Image (cartoon, rainbow, N blue to C red; front, top):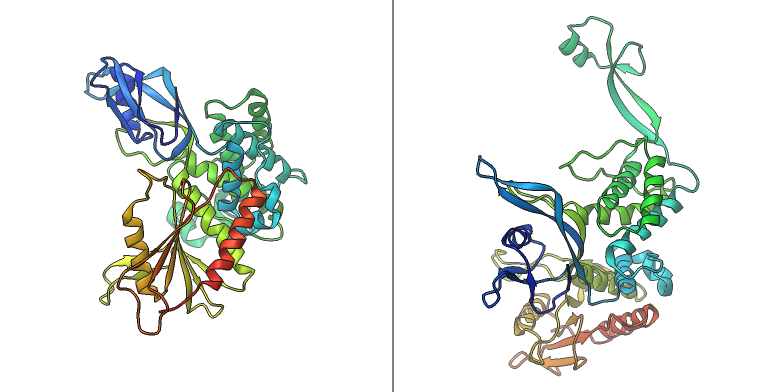
Length: 423
């Protein structure tokens, strides 16, 4: 079954079990029975795109819980409005804005010839892992604590007494082992395994992922339910870095948290709201660095003097001293409705400008028919100001070529610097 991101609800023939499974999965914005067509469900996709396999429940078991069919599942594909190649260009900025800004035109994520999210993702990850492993599997020192018959490293005296009452052998020891079982390799292995469970992975890519999985066999599998292991960027793992960043994105997108009673899902979903916000703020922050300014993401502030109402603008631009605000930007993955954007966005931006003492605020939208709009707020002019607070609504066309998109951010960053007028 294929739906399109943020498209109108579509009436689809589904039995009750399949419809309830989709509704319980939480993947869609809405899934409800069609009141006008028996045996049909109205399905509407939200901002998440990708593919997911939803198991279909059977009749309840004697204990009352629904039993899951072992072989039957519904594969749901949600297509993005943005072309897949451009979507992965945005992903490159969200993972590593500085590197993506430097590479510019070519982007940082190669998707080959694939035009759907999951095939493109699997191809991109496999290529990145292959590039990372070209010089061999990375090794490093890891602290090992174990029981052994031979003394190595140092004796863990407390454990020796607690477990063996001081008798030897075995000996409780701890030592540093030079091994390929390090966090970096564990993450790459886990990404391969996660992709191999997804629907729609092309056969040739699947074979190459199996090959990469074998190369990483000495790395321990990740423990289900635990967070990803931490790793520190260094000169030694520099060749791994792009593959690690993309692999972590895969593991975050394929490992949703499920509460008791929820259906187990296998799939990958991008949240376009998050991806768009990360792209806008990341690209704009890199463009502003060329002006010597500092961009802070989700900069915390308070609306009231009692510090009880918190605010977090997407991007606050500061002077090089890091203390003086220059501009504020919020990214909104929304389209116009009835020729206008939600007024609540303007109220929110006005609050940001008031708290930060700025004469201008900037909202960046993903789609719109009327280009930029400027609203001057009534009653906001102060003595000595030439005008009141001005709220700008910008529209960025994600269908543009990467070089044109980056040029657009360069122009906007110059306007943010030139248009600053503190109240």
